[in-house]
Amino acid sequence: MAGLPLWAACLAAFVFGYLCGSIPFGVLLTRLFGAPDVRSIGSGNIGATNVLRTGRKALAAATLLGDMLKGTVAVLIAGYFLGHHAALCAALGAFLGHLFPAWLGFKGGKGVATYIGLLLGLAWPAALFFGAIWLAVAALTRYSSLAALIASVLTPFFLWWWRALSEAELFALLTILLWIMHRGNIARLAGGRESKIGRAG
Image (cartoon, rainbow, N blue to C red; front, side, top):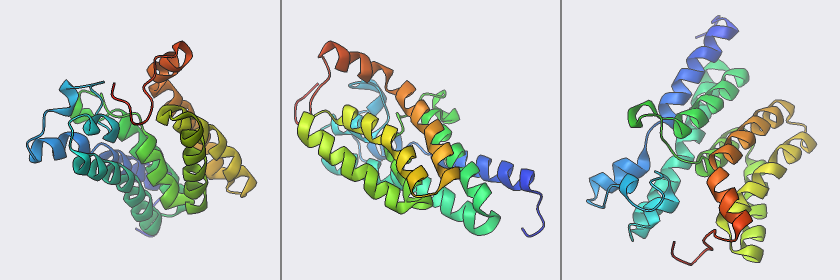
């Protein structure tokens, strides 16, 4: 695709990323293996945390992996064929595709796994940083959502410190979107009603 105008490359990458990101692994895997429809249980979310509420740990792990890697694959392919700017556009498309998949009435997941997958594809040291912060906060508080929220806030600063300025700007935007998608968790955290790791609910 040499010679493709930048705007066209970015648009193509965005659409490709959206299509990758909108693959609903939680719905597909639970349906394929005969588990209850993940949208009918718990929070109704299609992500790995809600898949875990089916009692199928392997399906939850597979959903987590799929939701991560669809972001990684999108940015790596877009970057290889269309360049770095296109990879960033693919990342935005993949994240929006996960949050708002057209096939599910634009009701998708909350974005944490895909966020990590995008970091793996664009700036893997930042993915390690995110994981380290998540583990530390989760160990101290036993709140998975709080760990993800704090890790996501710190990640753009790490990217800025690492001199990945374009990625820092992108992930600042993705962090805002992630926080919006977690507004229910934030309200429960503020009210002391959020479920802790290892506790049902």
